Image (cartoon, rainbow, N blue to C red; front, side, top):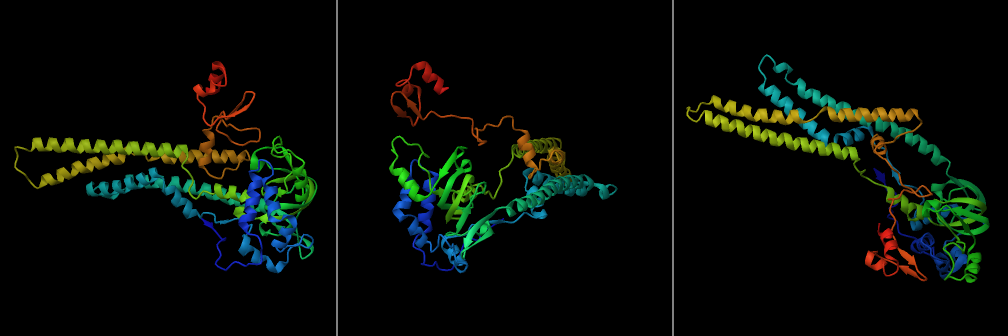
Length: 447
């Protein structure tokens, strides 16, 4: 469950002369820059001096503590959505939602009803045992799954709490420096930047001394990216030829959230916070309310469905054959009421075939095996959050990644060719490539 606390019903204030959409546009331009798009937008807005006035901030004394609420109404906050941990009963119910478990529960109830109804008076007191045994297997399997997930969830909460407590930054408010948690940073805050810190939100560099950042979390590239003030970046842009310059030949004045400072120090003013920031957009995309089924769960569901269908078809054939045989044998005999009981027994036999066909021990065996695997991995100092992850990673035979550790599909696509001139290709086929390359070389690209 995710509690979204960003929705507000109070009217927006009009004290600020810049909208959050304009500020977001600057941050996104930096994230997708090809030359100096974010610098151009900042220059069009009015530059560094305009932002100080438009955000009602002060580059020397920082924010006033009494206007924090107004800023949250206009620009949002930097707090992450509160994700409540699932209770034990929620995890147990989630385990019971498995398709195989549902079939086993239904089969157990049918088995109890049929066995008790058809058993003789001497054995009726024990007829429920077989169906109850199936229910016990379901209970053990689901509880083992729920207990494992609950324990690991608690351990991860403790680890996350320790890591989250360390995420603090130094800001200037009321003319004084104070340490606050990253979640308390607001638009207009003046943040002190130093080597090794994580940038809490998207912001504009106000002061810089040999400032470089690692933006591999955003771009996947580990090259240090130079950062500097807006005035320096404008001057550098005017001296650079855009036709031959690279993406980062001109330093950027924008610090993106989620990146780290490699060298230098300085100051920055916060422009975008929360889910609207560069890191916030990625976090919002990664939130999934419903996890996907693992490969093993898909296979078990397919097996249960196939076995269920096979048992159903077999039961139908058995009932039909027995009814035909009964009709042939009794065709020359006068009808008696006791024959109704015999026909009912035919349908009971068919139901019994369906119940017996379902492998009630399979889910329990799989659950106990995965639970044992997670315990073994814990001994190796490897904490597994979800028990199904053991099965998923255990089935991985190859992991394809680039030099930064980013997972890829292990596929490459030809997008352009240099043949005295740069030729861009939207689609590639042998007939089009042979217009620019020899046949043998074109075949290599196609392969």
